[in-house]
Image 1 (cartoon, helix red, strand yellow):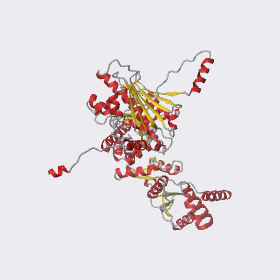
Image 2 (spheres, helix red, strand yellow):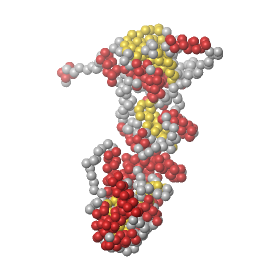
Image 3 (cartoon, helix red, strand yellow):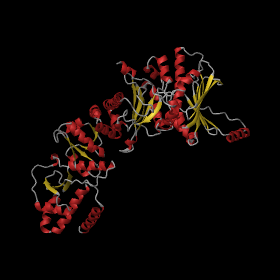
Image 4 (cartoon, helix red, strand yellow):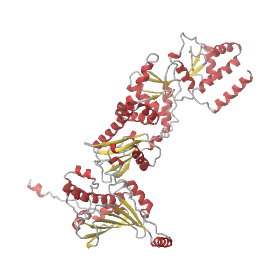
Length: 635
């Protein structure tokens, strides 16, 4: 045992600063622009800490006009972030700046907050102690000039990109707070552009809890021109009061009862630059145990696939993190627009990827529940308004049901179907009305215009037809059939409903059947004879429901970027000939006396039935028009 102990050595891993700095410069964050978010976040933390000390009575006689100023000096090639927060003493500079990954925020939390939870409520952002060093991603030298709120003399710290620093004691700085001066490298000129810097601040810092101002130092020649203009003017112009680039009290931080509809609409326009009014919103305010807030908007979709352009912005204590993190926002909700602020969000150092999937799954489930609750509430309490919104909500709800079974279970009783006569019904309402004529069968149309003849046949017999005219509907009704035993959806041109048939059985006419196969050009065409109540219709062409769904599935397959050209499926088509029709009776007689004329009439009948099913091809249309004109000449 003693020999083993004598052969064991303990120690700590050491890192040479000149080796770690190149890694920081290249790999600390996926996007270089994030450095500005990190430096401004640190400034925000400095103010937040001071506010906390004031509230605890630890700091007194403090000027509470808190602010952060980002100063761009293109000529000097510097970008400076200044705050009037807590500042640092010389010892704190040595402890927190000279040592990588030692977080002053964590020590502050342990000393003054008692727990990490308390700190989250106060908005402390930094935790890792690495964000400051992101400045070296774009800078060859960084200066820190800081003075503590305690009144100790200021300190200046200067560090090169090689990690070599020097500290100047008793440096002059009149006010408390910190300046971080970044000397921008020659190949990073984009970060000396005013519009680029403003864009970064607006992207990441628009809702930070301390006012942020952008100050651009003008070149000397521009200053002289301004002085000339000022001298030449008859009256001096009042200097406009600068405005912060951020809103320190974002709408999601307020209680829903304190917010007006106009405020919700204005916030939506401001954040998303979308001047179409959203359909409605959900204000999320989860407390224990999840602790997150946010607002989700249902945008008004321009078309079926506009939904793919949603945007849910994720914030961490009012600091922008990323758009549409799928672990937090369920995929089918990414079509929405909104903001989520999750101060408990477990992020890694780059604040871009999630570490604790269990916690995140709870957030995701809570959001799904709240969305479903909102839809159910509108259906149950504001059905008339809900129906007016349904055409815009339909795609979102159907996609959600396809992607998440729990979501379907929550909203299944609030799913509507638009009928061909523009009414709205639920599935139970439709089935209750249909049970005497077509029990558990839902008849639908995919195109009200081209299938108008079919719709008229069904409606004349009191059979309600619902409209399912989107590609996603094919997948959706598969789910509905699986979840509702015995229920089946049948397109009106897929089958002849029994309610459309007259009493009795039609006689088969083999000669007519062969004639229709000949004029169709499809020897495998199925031909059946029925007695239909509507004797004005000579024939209808039915495509089986299975074939139709397979065709729709292939359309979606190709739209997803797959060719699918080598995947061909036979179409199961049946021409239903109405033996009750006077035209069919005459055609049967004509076939015996004038075969050529019968062939022309049969071709017209078949083409008209085909036209009610789909658009004619160019050749089909040319032949149909030519034959129609010939027949008119012979009338």
